[in-house]
Length: 547
Image (tube, rainbow, N blue to C red; front, side, top):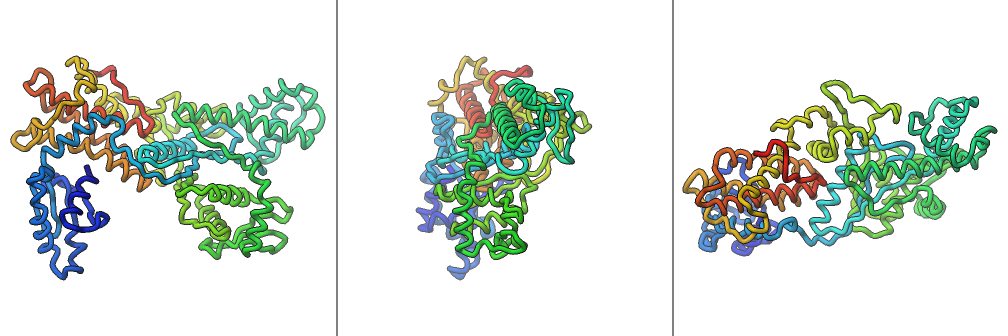
């Protein structure tokens, strides 16, 4: 609908479509939409915006005859529009017929979306889950809009953290066997390490752990632990409804380090100093240059990032999106600098940051996992509140802001629990349909035109509810374009609230216009279902408090 209106206005006014901005007035009494076009044309036409708005309103009066607008009002320099009931009814019927295809686009651009990429040295914790949900939902929205999306998990299976995993498993196995074990200051601990150690003992036998550890044994234990953790990570993500198209191994990419380093040296992006190799990242906005090879000859974590992003850009996607934890903020400038030195356009790389989560239970800090040692396991929280709650909560606040929530609040069955509130609206409609012995397909060809208008409170409320349903396609586009999924959760809460208010104000069953009212309710249900599915959230048709 939004695009149809822009096309119509651009054609009538003979203005470029890109110049037609449509805004939603804060007060619906001022119209469904308003355009500030007059302000944009004021300088060019050397007239006041108010005068130009009067001219635009007159030009668009044909829209009333075309059943596009019911009323056109110039307000100051704005031109405000009330949509014709016929237009709303037509788009509502199209939406009923199209179901989950409403708002589906044909963008076509290729997107490489990397997220989670947690080190495979332990289970996923609740902080990882926030970026996981954001990435998965961005992919869902992008695919709905027609983008060709590849979701990717970068497996950090090289470097010190993997070596430390192997050592930690070896030490845990020796403790299990009652052998001496001297623990370093930093090592991985928790029941999950013991589980890996027990598995290693079964596979390798006790004798393998009697002597001092060889480099080969530690490497084997590290690989064994990494593989077990990756399997668990996949299972944890699956519990949230998340699966990846691609897993890329950091270790496998290191074979390309020499060629990437040679290219950077040739382009003067890397230089030697103090026995180390430095990336000249300050040349492209970083606060200082960064070490990429230490004085012992070992590449740093940044070197792996450079190889990986060079590999990404050589795969020739149109858009690259990374979702990183907020603690990786400092890496943005240096990775982008490396891309510039390698001849790539770093502006094609977007990096979204995901802040940490504070979890409470009945007002007290959520209990940390004994199995993990010192953090809250994702699997524990999913088991406690479910995937739907976790997804909705994580998307209800911008990812770059701190999030705190109490899981007990999301077990309540009332309007204070937004997940329950939205679910209940969807289930309530399906209860109505069941009582009327109607299905969604029975109502696809029913026009809601007789319900729309402004002659009665019922007609006005029906028109408002239909208009709100028809905002979903634009909400999807806006949420993806801004990378702000709060727009989706806010929209669903508003729609659920509007329906509950409508339901409490008006009788629906056994009314003269029952069929049309049920069609409007079906439109709400379809809209809620599509919005929830794009967030990876279920849409129940039956709930305990149904009436």
